[in-house]
Amino acid sequence: MWDKVIFSNWEIIYRTSSSYVNIENHEHQDYLHFIVNYLGYPVLVDSGLASYMKDHMHANARNAEYHNSILIDGHPYSPTKEKIFPDEYYVTHNSSAKTKTKTGYKVILKTSGFNRIDSAINFERHLIIDDKSLIIIDNSKSVLDHKIENFFHFDNNLRFLNNPRFFKFNVNDSMIEFVNYGDELLNSSLNIYSKKYGHTQRKKVLNSINIINSSNPIIHKLNIT
Image (cartoon, rainbow, N blue to C red; front, side, top):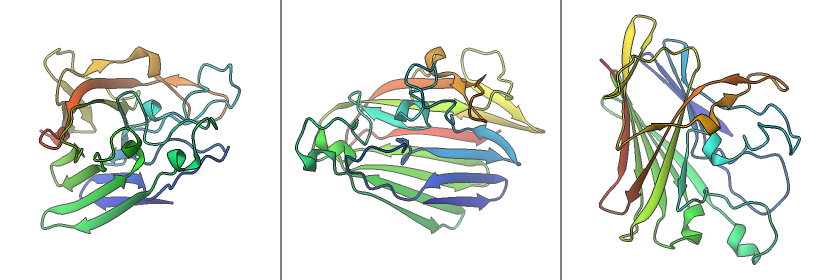
């Protein structure tokens, strides 16, 4: 199931739940993924899937890194469908909540999926929406350090300003700045997406690696400047 928040000029679409067992299907690793439109224009996009053929260059687009999502210690929230561990290893419980705030909306996405790495992680992603910003906060409840890798997939029609110090782009007459936690890098290995099965085109992908723990949430923002 999917839900959305429409507030001011924002539209945010996200997966509400996706409990996981080791059953072979075409499901994407997209529970923590979300799509962003501003003023009706796409900003953060879905990669789609150009082909189910294993040898196609877009065959891995079901994976978490092809979504506006994360990896922790190199792993997505749901494991690959290989029957090599006990059944309980593959079970993932996810939940979401949407609440109205004084200034907009807050969406909380929770998953137990990373607990197979560290049982204390209990990962949460918070999306905080108001008139002038969308804030993405990734939280771990574990005191231990873990490597988190973030991925953000931007629509190919956006024109970024040529400045190495920040990522800014225009949407209609509005300027949006992407505020990154650390050193966000362009990732050309993930820059293919598909709006129609069998067809591909390019997009811009920003990707970073940081350390997350209970006292160090990872925060990214889209600010209207």
